[in-house]
Length: 99
Image (cartoon, rainbow, N blue to C red):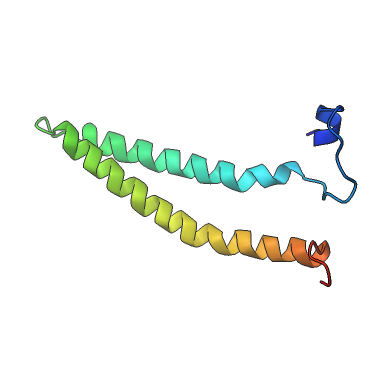
């Protein structure tokens, strides 16, 4: 993946900016993929679960609760990863003066 200065040569990029790798897209992509998979499974198990008398609001309520709890669990799992990564980056490349 090209950097900002390579993709848009007219935009000057200061040399002090850290280089961004494409690995930064992996965790958000996994987050969205997991969330999409859980919502798809919840939809099909609720809407096509064999109950002929299910109404739209029941499907919506099930999807909302599934989405809320899945996001809570994923956030609790990924927050330490992001904070540890930020601390490591700060330790390697101090951004604040006097660090």
